[in-house]
Image (cartoon, rainbow, N blue to C red; front, side):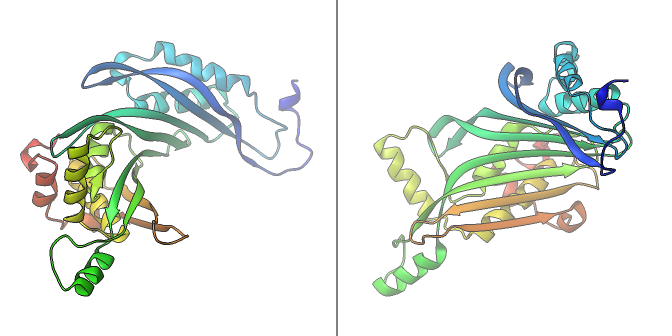
Length: 297
């Protein structure tokens, strides 16, 4: 009997044990063709109270299956699902497992006449047992917001309307879709939904005239953190409602790095298909440059 299979000294269940931060190159299919991503992988299994430990080398064995996953499952969600299934096969004594994939994906961004290839953070996870699992897809983008309250105040102080001064925040906006059924969501489409919910997106490269155009447009589109998370949830729902199961939850979180306060602002909103069913999607999708007939089923 191997030492991991012996009785534990204390009959306490270990909810998660495994490796964190295993680096691998993963190939996925994108609209531009096959793309290789350097991905950080976390893999954990559960250990029951009567076992001393888990055979952790099997977690690396599970990762090695990436070389034989069929091409039709070449998505981050597909890889996470395959790894989760393999973990439970290799650890028959575990009733649940967790797989997390973290990577940076480069998404074409367009705003006014500004175009760029911008980095977004992506996190995919699968957790649970063989019969019931929870799937999560998260995308985080950077952008900016203009405070509508301060803009109204300066307008009153100056006694004029139009584009009056306000304070501007750099924000991190995360959109998350969670459900009990595997759904492959295009990272590019999620990122576009997030950027469209801000006062303006941020770009790695801006020429002088482009900076001016972006700033003026952002000041014409002031938003509270509350506005951003609500609009993000609504826009993600409108974009993906035809592919999401009824058990889904759509969530948005924003961290606003305040420019005039030493503290920052955080906001979160979430909704289920039942909560969001009455939303008018036409104006939200129009802002993305699509209409409802173009939303993929």
